[in-house]
Length: 72
Image (cartoon, rainbow, N blue to C red; front, side, top):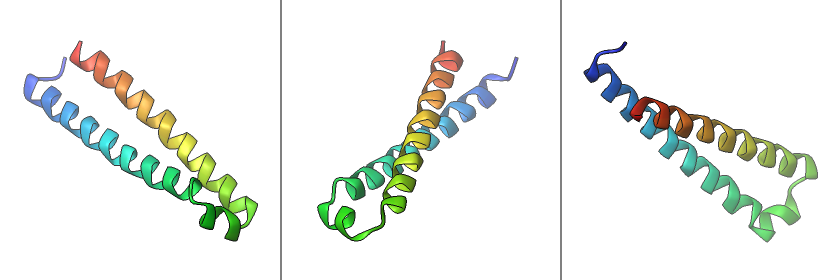
């Protein structure tokens, strides 16, 4: 079992990563909601951004589950 200090550091690290992913998800969502962006980029680029956002959302969800497990 990790020491309490290590546990606290791990929780802090996960919170930072969740916040970073939240920023990335927000940034990508803004792009995808921008008509100017959508109208001028190829469909492949839009699909790439959608996949990236989906991957970030999945990773964020896993990290949140880890936080629940560690904090529990």
